[in-house]
Length: 251
Picture 1 (tube, helix red, strand yellow):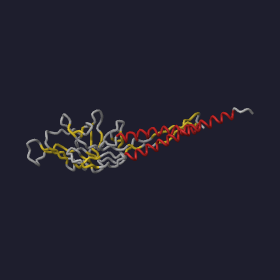
Picture 2 (cartoon, rainbow, N blue to C red):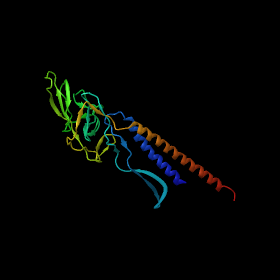
Picture 3 (tube, rainbow, N blue to C red):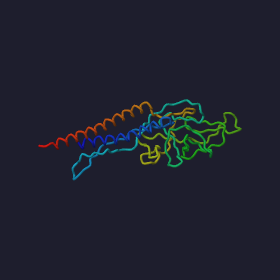
Picture 4 (tube, one colour):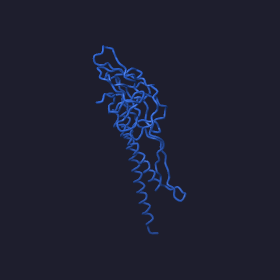
């Protein structure tokens, strides 16, 4: 009986982690460039007592946090500060309170210090992993290789000045993960070197690769699994009570 209850409790604990991933995915479904979280691998462990395995089982998680690298839907916005990556490369960003990380978010803007930032204020870094500082400009262009060009006030139409290149890299498959702050980095917490492999498109914005309908279906399925495990625990309790009554009958 103890085995039945422990198995059900282990399953419920695993569902808690899945629920966290589903909730995070749904919360970021409208965030440009967001990468959908996937459940990491797991197994089960048994508590040993006097070198013998007991019925007590615990869920174990293995491996690093993984995510889907599938490209999100591309939307033609026509906004000159919107930029999308057309291949599997990533941008380099500098969060206000963290280490350098990778990102696919391309809703750019300019902060109060004339630095190029994304939609949440992360600094967008150059190929030298330095902030891109923009002079006063009346128009801005991003070439397909990531070069940033601006037309300064008073310049002739079509007269653009280069101010640097967007840093980009195409990491090897399964070489990056999401850190505790939700940012993408190498497995050891560092960032790969820039290789300038990004292919850019201006006036286009990549959405998240979260399918809200799919996440909702998974959420309902998870709720059914939770209810089944709760019923299993209640059934174990009823069987245990019935057994206790039988044992208490006079002989």
